[in-house]
Length: 180
Image 1 (cartoon, rainbow, N blue to C red):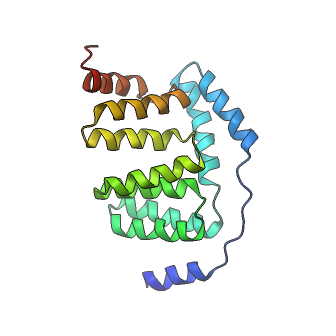
Image 2: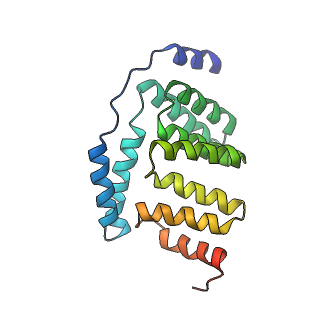
């Protein structure tokens, strides 16, 4: 049944969706940098995520939603299948690469997750979520200096990320041995 449904979706033509408005994202990223607090930054961040997630065709969006449900159920292989199918249809969909990187990370495929994050960043260099993910992967590998650099890059884009200052302190301790 799953394969039949996937085959039907893959046979459905993908309608080109307009790319997210660069000017709108530029404006939102400026607002994100200027936000005085995490609370003020939260709705701006949410708007950015909506644009990123909404950049897919309806078919790709359906596959990504299924992948997310599978991830929620910890059905990592099924989620990976869904994200693979979404990326086959829309290889320029940055958020599809990000979701697949997350699934790969959860499966323990750190090299695959890094490759997918590189694809995200090729398409959207300001993807603070991908940079934070890269930090988590480096931390998992106990490469604390790399984890710190990736997280600092994420904070340069989204300085008021929830929990950002605390995570930064923890990474500095691990990477630099700093007592905070």
